[in-house]
Each structure stands twice: as structure tokens, then as C-alpha cells.
Image (cartoon, rainbow, N blue to C red; front, top):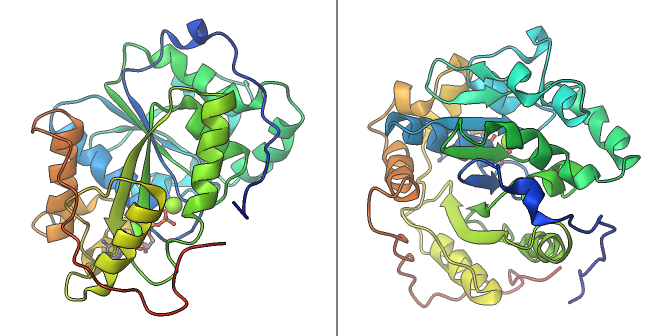
Length: 295
Ligand code: ADP
Ligand code: MG
């Protein structure tokens, strides 16, 4: 593969270190920005908390959009995930309750410098996994909101996670980079977290009126042998409006089809409906010339 890059990761220590991990941890990652990672973490988190599960959300993006969208002011926080990853405080000391249900381990802009410091440390890939061990009995589900890069923070998330969910905006060329993300997953599986599983691709910002989005999905699913999760999350202006209010779209516009789609996925993740969800029915539509995957 042309885009293959070897990573310099610290090999996994004995698995006994994670016997106390929370029941299920899902990383939401895609190094492309604007594909609805943060929206997915916030919406699924609230929907699963509404089902009575104990949910922790972790903001791993220095831009702190998840933190902001759940009503916390990142600039007013004394402690954040940055202090936790550097081992200054325990994760429990930095966790906040939110008005919408899930607890949040927030981020601040300080996290931007965290990668540089972590890079100098042995076992840097395990900082998050170790920090979350104290929550073994506290949460049913932990969702990790990754930054738009494949750096140390995303590697920490993939090392701490049981599963990876890949939000994908269904546009021409939006699948570029999926191969690179999967290469990173394979490196993580080989070196730092052999149990990591890929849950599948979640179609986001989906426009059901065109067949093009489905063609993009068909191409990605086929090329990378990935499951495409259903229901797709339809595009709606309501999603753009919600973060500014500090409330989840499930509180401000719950009837929006995209909000209902997140609730359906949440029921599946919480084991309340039979799964896995059906793979989207994909018609035989060709992508326009020049839009094929490949780096
Ligand atoms: P990421 O975390 O991948 O960068 P975000 O979750 O921040 O992406 O989403 C990027 C932008 O797209 C935000 O303005 C968000 O409100 C908007 N958005 C997310 N999901 C939808 C959707 N289904 N329909 C319309 N806009 C959306
Ligand atoms: Mg984000």
C-alpha cells in the first residue's frame, strides 16, 4: 500500500494492566475534520445516558468543541484531560457532570502542548488507558472524541478503546484517508492494543436525496471491507445550531431525523435492539471519474 507508514509505538505490556477497565470504550476517530466526530460523541452519549446507562465522554481535541457544546467553558476550567494525561491528577478529579446526562472529561487548549510532552515519555500510548482504569465500576460506556489527526492523542484513544467508530461524510473524496486510518489501527492492533475492533463506518451529514453518498459508501465498504452502520445520520441545520446553546440536539430538536438516528444507534450500542444494524442498501452507482479511493 502506497500510504503505509511504520509507526514507532511502544509494545503492549501485559494485558493484566487493563483488567479493571470500564465495561466498553469506543473511540470515535477520523483524521479528517468536520465529519461529525464531536457531534456523534455528544449525541450518542446523551442518547445512551437517556437509556439509563452511565456514560463518560472524553474530549481529546485541543479545540475543546465537545466541552463547549456540552455547556462548559474550556477557559474557565482548572483541570482537564491535559492534566490527567500528564499524570498530574487522577481522571476522577477532572471529570464534570453535564446538564444533558453524561459525565465529561473536558479539554482545554493546553492539550495542544500535551503531545509534545508525551512524546518524550516512555509508554506515552498508554496514558489514557491507565487513567481510565480507575473508572472500572463507574461507567457502562466511555466515548472518546478524537482530534483531527493521527498523532499521539488519537493513538492514546485507540490504545484505550475496545472499538473504533469511523464517522464518514459521504462526499466525493471524503473516503481519502480511511486507508491511512486503518493502517494506524493495524499498527495499534499489532503493538499497543491487540483487542481493538473496528465497529464500522457511520455515514454522517448524509443527503438521502442523491445517490452519490451511497456510491461513496459502497466504495469505502468494498475497498476496505468495512461495515456501514445504519441508520445514516441525515444532514440538518439543527445540528449546527445546537452546540452554541451548550445543549445536545437531543434536547433542542429531538424530532430531527438525525437525532432519532443517533437514538436508534444508541439502542443498538446499549444492547436494547438486535444488532448489528443492517448494512445500508447500496445501489450499483459508479463514482465519477477521479473520485476513487487511494492516497
Ligand atoms: P468533527 O468533530 O469531526 O470536526 P463536528 O462534530 O464538529 O465534526 O461537526 C462539524 C460541523 O458539522 C459542526 O458545525 C456540526 O454542527 C455540523 N454537523 C454535524 N453533524 C451534522 C448533521 N447531521 N447535519 C448538519 N450539520 C452537522
Ligand atoms: Mg471534533
